[in-house]
Length: 325
Length: 261
Image (tube, rainbow over all chains, first blue to last red; front, side):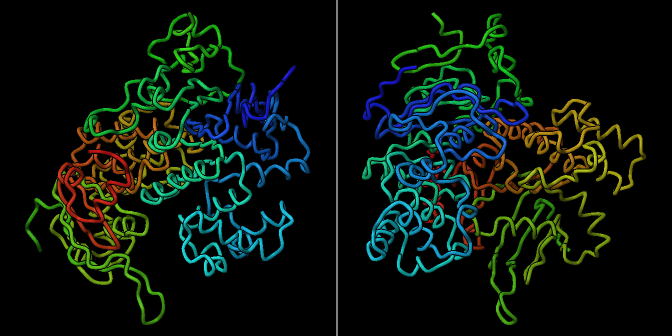
């Protein structure tokens, strides 16, 4: 296969990624996605949709027993699908920053905050201790942590949830990454803190020119933050498009279902769902449209073939036979 | 004895918290007062640490107040003996928790867990209990073959529906729901919200619904109380409070949520 990716075209390109467990369950079936430099891309789906597994595959941190069966991942034109741990360590924490979901579990409880942030610099740069310290303080200020000199000497448990999340963000951006992966960074946080973190990610994207892959199940934050959105269902993207296209004119029935599930003032006191309830996820190989059983517009072909991505308009695509012209 | 039975719940100047040292106490609830009307769905909103869960635990009796009075259907609950509490209280007040996975005994089938609250009450015989349990299982939207399944064979949303069934099977007057949909996916959350609405028509109960999600509260509740650092800073009709907040904290909370109600 030929890939003449110029460095500037896509920062991240994932092609037909398939991730399976040791038991053969298909956790990610066929995910393709592209991120341009400076773009904020959302990956939306419910639990079991494969959104976290996809990002783990991109970051090379898949759990024991889960592996990439097919497909390629290109970061800056370089194939990073099966690179060695050594090469991986040069990328992660350096050009690829990752913010994890649970800030309290991602920090070492026995190491002071300042030292944990400094560790990233120690590994990836040749700066002197003095330069490193200045950069740690500078980055901590950049993520709006208060009173940085004092805070750097604290332990994780002495910080609030929002502060811990900011520390994680500081660690992820200290080396000015080209791509920032944020895996549900706001789920464990209060509304007001959530809004602040979203603002912060926007700011990092703007001031540091980092592309962002934002993983979430929460459409309200995606709407706020993302340029483009991929909607995932059972390990396959079912709809791709600009955020406005997806949220205002969803085409795939699953996206419609997700959007109608969100309580809004207009729907007050009324039933939310009109479609069939979710049953247990099917983990075998896909032989038909996976949403066919729940789809109100299902027809013959949906039960016989797996749909491709079909163009709806201007880059808005949906994996639904209704758009196969 | 109070005789105002319109109010299912009345809390007067309650202080609750924990001791940080021998002489000092940290108050989670600092002089909280509120009234809940019979048949009302009252939403409690507030940030983490504001005392939402402590309030729920206080009403159910898991936490004892340091001072203050709590009246349930006009009766001061602290005067109850343990026996009275179990008998009268348990069929009067029921609770649904946030995490459905830790709400069930993994070694007991769903059917048995549904029957357990009725067995404790001893008001029905065995066959009646089973019949009632099967009926409730159907009401929460699960087919009869779930009756003999174990908790690990169910998804989070299904378990949360069973949890609602377990709570409502004794036909309580008051249901305390502590973030019952927070750990669920959006579409599953929608299912459970729809179910709560259906069950409200079926069983006539009041509900204290705790959530940090303002949209969910707006969707489901009649009235809302905003909790900030252990006191209620604003309470009223959901529409009034969300559309025209008076308190600074409430205003902040609503603008942060980014909704326009």
